Image 1 (spheres, helix red, strand yellow):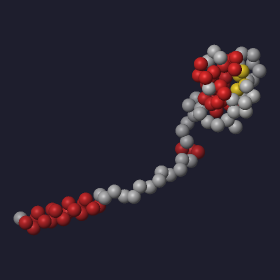
Image 2 (image 1 turned 60 degrees about the vertical axis):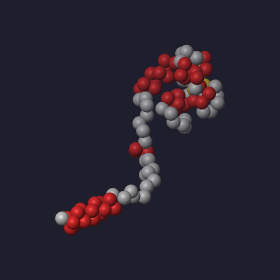
Image 3 (image 1 turned 30 degrees about the vertical axis):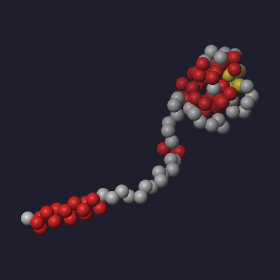
Image 4 (image 1 turned 180 degrees about the vertical axis):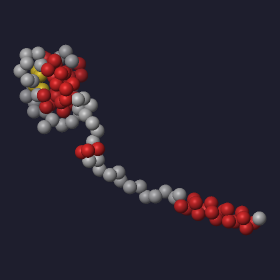
Amino acid sequence: MLTLSAAAALLAMGNAHAQAPQALKAPAPVSAAEAPAPRYTASKLEFAFNYMDGDRDGKVSRAEAAGFRGVARHFDEADADSDHFLSRAEFDAAMNHAKAE
């Protein structure tokens, strides 16, 4: 009986040793293919941009953005080239939380 208890204790110790924590590995870098998908589709962005672009000049002014609380609040952040207008690329980048090109 003592032998069975000793064998069980050895097995338990062996299992505990086998389950010891491994060294932590740094996460693998995220590739472009694994990057999160854009929040909005191109067609939804086009619709929203065209809706805001009241004078149809291909850019959104601060005055045009004023009626859209989220766009107006983040206008300066989205205006990457500081020309006081949002281009379609700036608008798309801001809506999808990316850098404008």
